[in-house]
Amino acid sequence: MNIKRRYLLQAFLCFFVLLSACEDNVYLPKPKGYNRIDLPEPAFQILPDTFPYKFSYSNYAELSADSNEHAERYWANLYYKDFDAIIQITYKSLSNPDIKPEILLNEAFELTMKHDAKAYGIEEKLVALPNGQIASLTELEGEVPTQLQFFTSDTLRHFFRGALYFNTATKNDSLAPIINFIKNDVMQMLNSFEWKY
View 1: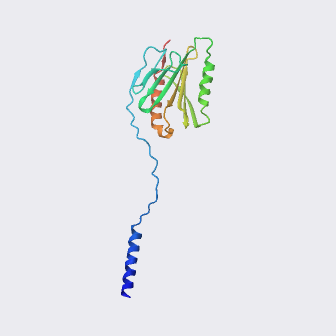
View 2 (view 1 turned 90 degrees about the vertical axis):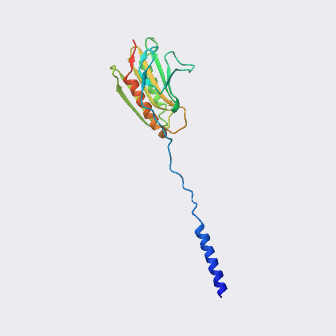
View 3 (view 1 turned 120 degrees about the vertical axis):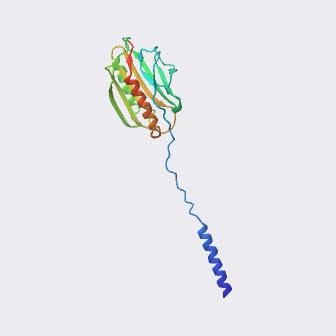
């Protein structure tokens, strides 16, 4: 009987050791993380004299001519290399009688509304510029290709439009700090905007 008890006690101890050695290997998903984004201090420079308009733009952006096959003379790009973002700038002279400002305004609104299906929020605001004119600034929320669009015109001689694009598949909620950073650059651009007559 003593031997049976001893074997039973050993079996119980082995079972207890095996049972206590087992861990709960349940998979727990990691919480969502976001990429670390280091934003530079804002600093600005003046657009070169070769354009019929002028403004201050970020030292962090590289200015280049628009290389699109349909690009016109005063179209330009502001490229934010570290963010893989670009502000595409287009310009139309209204001195040509075939170019009507109301048609350009309608096109600007249509280009914005093309994103209405994917945007879950579109906020348009009018910005009073120091030059006495008005700019339209539209912010789009959601998984849209352009998060920010803006335009201004003197309605007599000039029409200027810009749009922000990212060349990345990163979701817009992760890009929010960069979008806000570039939005502040756009506000600086608009607040320093002038036409060269």
